[in-house]
Length: 247
Image (tube, rainbow, N blue to C red; front, side):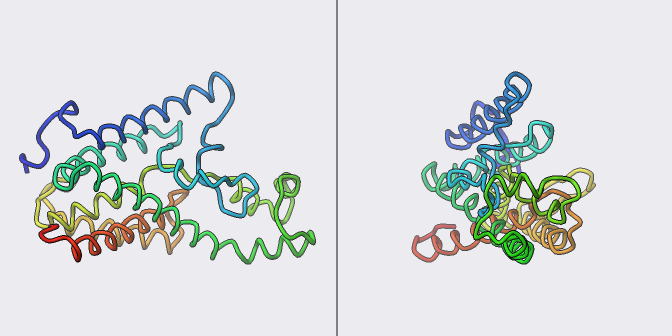
């Protein structure tokens, strides 16, 4: 294991290091903007549901670099996993391919998350449009249904809830490590014995699927995690097909 995980942050390859720095800087900016200017950057750069009037196209990309300013451990664990496993992949693949993979899995996570949201919210949105005789949801309608007591209040809250975090791309990174180094033993606290990477990744996928389907995962976007893994799997298989000795 030492050949994979040894080294300090200063020895981290460039793309992995820059991704971590961007995430940390944007978290600090979010934290400071709320306290100094009463502006929450997550409401501009987080990913909103595509039919929400506050959705903007750039959010599909920017959301994966944002984190909740009140949940520092979310940022910490994402960046720890990115550093731990991302530097290995970058050293194996090179910076360009690793960056393409990271961004592709983050975008894949957003796509799957949005698709699941569409399936879940489509009936309520159709009912809302029928009740108000509108073709689309605008800001005025959103403000109206966000009034307590409105029958569409919960839908309004969903439309105003941004999705943020690097977790989708990080799960893609974990998937890649498990595929390239399936038998590498990993020590995961509080489990007192090592687990092979392939079993850890399979377990993470199964848990995300269960929590997503059961609705017991709170505000965590579990299907985004699965989206990152799915797109990572497809991309690795594609590269492996057309690149000799890819892994």
